[in-house]
Length: 449
Image (cartoon, rainbow, N blue to C red; front, top):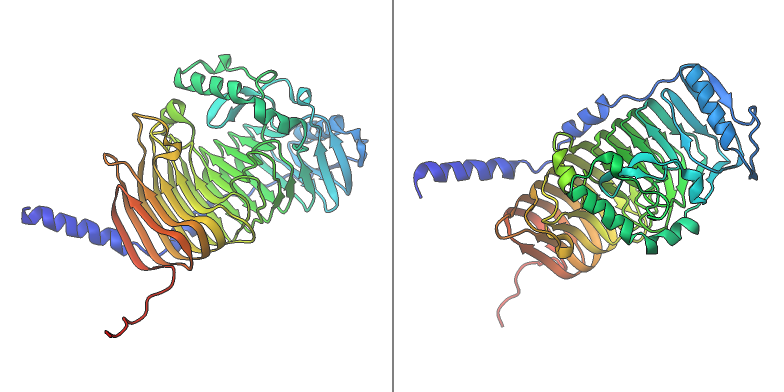
């Protein structure tokens, strides 16, 4: 080995090793540049339009009328006062509107799939297609919000729940269309395909606020941030335990702040995505990026997940000051496979407190052992100041491929008090461990006897 090459290795290794502190300034810069929506002074109360919070009356027409009046007045605030408002069909946003659901108010959607026709342009597990409308849907809007201390109930536990057992044909059809680059206009789903809609979806939107509301009983993903940017999600809470009830799914999303959220989900709490396979790779100019997750309470399947649909790439994710408040299978889960391609890089996790989990920190490039030909690039992942009381399976797992190794993983001040399997580190290079304790801490060596 010549001296110049050796010097390069030392410099590269040192520059990576020095980057162990959480980049607080970078995360703050993202949060500070996100713009909150601003609304005109116009207000409309749905009750004054004829809505009844009696849990029986179908109020769809009154919510539609409120949106139309806001559009006529170039925006405003729709006030939903105390009561239970049945809405048989979707609420479609227009720009410059704040849907304010007051304390004691609940919007309860119907669970009749026919109410969510005609089809709208949306996405399903990383593939763009036409499907049932999300229950709250904003397409190409700016300056929009859902606020207040009320509840949105997706009524997802009966009719929609039954779709799960019937969705496979539709799911595989969507993936074949993705792989074969079928024109978007030919990707029609809806009736007969059993692909459940998201509860709330913001699609091609900008300057979004979701604050203090409660989300319950979603048919599918709860809050889908699709191809949107400048987003603030804060102070919301969940109780949504149906199949695939991810809490928040940023997908091709940019400049996102998620803070002070109390999760209780049947699936991932935050699942960062960026498109699936061929279609995702074709959108590599719009990765999911610049996402700050802080001061959240995790409960559900996994805390923060990156993937598995991430083919356009995920970068610049900052997770700080979060903890569990109940069961969690995995704390941080980075997952991709050889169908995906793309990259995951510049991921920072600091001050994470976990109670009992199955696996504490899990990075795998071979999720479900699927795929070939498109291995993902995973690099520059930094974990610091993480505690876990018990991992019933593994403390730390890193799984790359021999020909595509995971690179530059930093583990600094990690303590896992109990784990069935401490560490599995496979096909990774430049994994730096400083003050890592798994199981009982060793003390001074015992004297010879």
